[in-house]
Figure 1: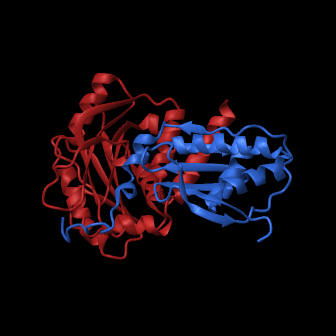
Figure 2: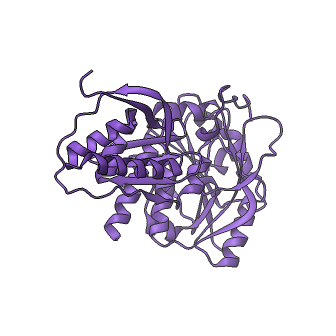
Figure 3: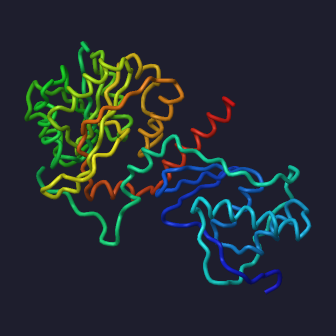
Length: 146
Length: 217
């Protein structure tokens, strides 16, 4: 497959982590920690690829295309960025796979290193959402008459 | 702490539970001055259950528009100087109101929360009592609520997270009491709601919070 690369897959740490990217801004919620995150710019570009499952090499290739980075710099940026995301338990690594780089446009803005915005102000409420501790048996039904 | 207290109960298809919710309000050591149940388009006879309480409860029936809209309808009808909320499938322990009123008076806060125990419908309800900024655990001065504004009716879920984020941004003075003030019932219908739009509203709420924060920076 032309343009394909082979290395470990990188994906969102579902179901603990959910996210949505709109207009170049990713919002990420971690049901286990109650933290939420925002990412723009190059970080959001990389996160969008991770949402579809990607590889370290494919991520670096995306940076090279979007920001005209040298391959060595792109690889370094990806390595550091994945370490940040892994530090917050946002991503999961899987078996080596072959992934075609996602087509990306040349970015209008100059490259800036990815920054993860971390927010803890609503953690207590997000942790109360019972979806985070559902087990395989599903939810027990309530009594017919309380 | 003096002042009249109105409680708003939002109800959608909770005929099996709403009677217990109302009884838990009527059983308070300090009974609220007005109890308003907003039936939000129920199809299961919830309104009939509420009517069974006679003039002790004011019933408002509206087409289904979601919990945010139902609570807003109730708030608009409430006349008290203080507001509290209870979802129709949840319960208040008998001292829920009294504990929160005492805390409000003692701290001078505008809003007080208590602890929440989640209950999966088994006979025992002995899970951990965790701090819970949920609508059902909140008691707030009406003037403070009005400063924040109503619940955002665009959200079918996560409307309370959005409201609390706006309350934080509005500088509402908040306090917490150690008592359990809400029994939150976890049951099949909760899951059904979440399966329809998993996390989508929560992510929209969080995006709005980030956008507002960025605009202020």
